[in-house]
Image (cartoon, rainbow, N blue to C red):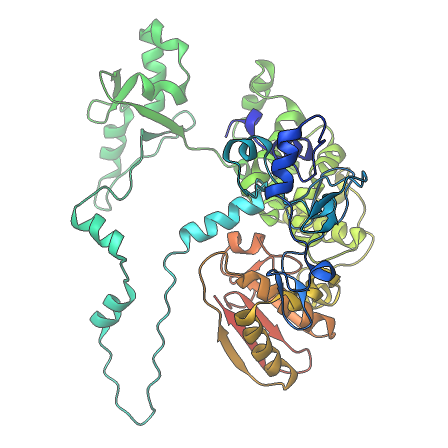
Length: 513
């Protein structure tokens, strides 16, 4: 996970993954293995009875042959488009001459080591990471539905309902029976107090006398003040920062002092100060600049870069406005240009107009600035060239949904559905075509193609000029979707994953996952 080892750009991708037929003269053994194990097909019109052909009319399940690419690029779906040069190299596979478009991506070292088919793909974007975390924390896949007649008296057994809902698999049951550790944090993390002079936290009960509280707390040291006191008395302690102090010292809550650590390990974590709190003392930032603890706009740019890794665009826009208010950047336009892609990521998913996306971002930042008493016109930011009303959510979302451009690949997705997916697709579209209400649950383990079905449904409905509103159960689920699926259930209308609704009807079809 160190920065120098992360795979995050096309140059790095080419060092790990190859999707080409190698030079037979220079690498004869590797060339032989690629031809033997890593060529897909032939299929399609070259071999219509190939196992990867399905449906009627038949379509290519794995979408081979791929397109030629002179260099590796980052695809729109967060997965790379690997280099597949049209260099005239062809090999004979099962009686057909195939080129680089038929090569399954592989790693040269692993192919030489294991001498077998091994598809290797780059999956390093934050979108992929959030997809994995979504499945890690979503819990067990289980749904229980019970329908009782209206005329029958129903006795609700809450204990049985709780027991039924609490499904424990055999491996987990065995783990719990033997009392094995379910989770563990190592090393122990100590939250370090951070406060201004004489502004430490004070705890008291409702019946305490105020004068007694003041007398009791007047001389009590906090972690931070005791840290300064330890540094004053112990010269050897001065070489350690506050965050590193728990590695060599332990905090005694009774005596309110730091003692030398004798055993075990511990790490410190400083509770961060929110930039929205503003400049508490005017001399603090000036002093930090003078001694080199912060570097003007570079530190602000780094703050936005780090936040973009785990924060969603709306939070980034609020952070950007906060920086404009309290951090006084020297070059506002450079910060805007450097981080516009992160600030507008969600809007760009469903709007093709760069100008409109820029206006939507600026208007939302203007709203944040106004709430903090600042006029956006006082900053060196682009001018808002059109009126984008973000206050009327329904109108805004209506325009955004009508502005979505349906990609041809998504329209063709319905031809790639397997039998189970096609049954779901046809049934839901039957309700849409006949204006019938309905609620559908699509259930299945991770990786079985639920999102693929959702995208096919969205494309089909939108291609007919109807509105398909999409929402997600969490931010992590929202980020893996495209074009309009950026909203969570809290920010839409409390639906769970995706709602397809005809523009001329109040009937709706919901897919809940």
